[in-house]
Image (tube, rainbow, N blue to C red; front, side, top):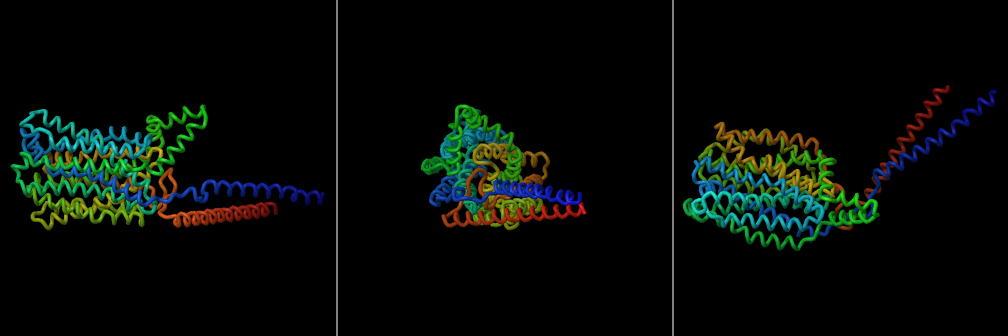
Length: 534
């Protein structure tokens, strides 16, 4: 009986040890499947000449878009007299900004059309179409008749031109950011993406600078008679240059790979073909966006609100605020805001490069907190007389703005996978811009007019800062990492080899660490079982 008791434990220990080994192997296999090392096929090497062309062509479209915005913002008072002469000066400004805001109401429609279309037929084709429409809408404003010539038809035609511009820009910024992000190496996406918004503020500076020169050279009389048309007519040649550059572009490597994978999946068999075809359709992509990516959509909308409320407050409303509300000279106000834009231009690529090094989240978080803390002091300085103190206030707003401008083009596309990136970003971006960004001049001017409180714009910015801070708390860091659904992108073959080698070493170390922990737990469990038997 004693012998039987001695043999009993020996027969039961061996199955337990074999079972433990099988569990160890299972854990190790699952770990490698979840976090496998990169291979050479998982890393793409960027074609740097194509990257430079892509950045230039995308930035030129943004320059075109914001050239129009700069012109329209600086000519708001003049356009009010040309197209809405019957109202008071305050009513004229509000009417002009209402037409400005109407263009933003159709931007989501443009996003719903151009975004999913860009995911289906390619980014390059859609960006060429948006360039044509933007140029046509801006050029059309320059040839419109005035109210004295066409009566009520003049503001209607102005509204039509603005609606064409708004519909086309619904696919412009999201497409341009997607295009640059999918071409850029992972470690330089922030720097290269910042050139897109560099084009934004260059365009605004060119437009506002041209209006400032015309105002000084022509005077208010000739500017109202015919001089206001000149900046809009300049859009024609800019549009031709931009279209030529975009027609020379190729689609991004990420889109080509996704299109090939989708085509291969559709051709697998007759049973799976209809399912894959429905999934790749416009309606299928929209269902995917709202059903599975709603959280990323909300984060995107919050960050876009933060950026664009600040952007339109500074670029579109501030010139009118300084002249109509604070009764400062038009030339002084225009020069102050123009100087702010030049400050942004000088700093923006530095901010983009810093986001590659320090991350996107720290910059967005610091900018959000600073917007809450510094908005009121900035507007208090702007309300002071003279030039020095208002210049400091404008400079503070400019530095806050560049914090978001330098990081947005790299942050927003990284929220979504390649298959739906253009569509999801277009929809989220344009809904947020339409509801909050483009309406900022209208809401701010109406609130100041209704309350008589000249600090209302500062309070508006503070609310935007709080929303941006909450959105940033849910934002995952993406600096230096591949885009979702895309291969890792590096600059040289040497970088690709080093990345693969580091990935294999890291995966091996992680597997070894987990193996050691599992074996340690197994030994601890065995000792506990032996102790229980004793």
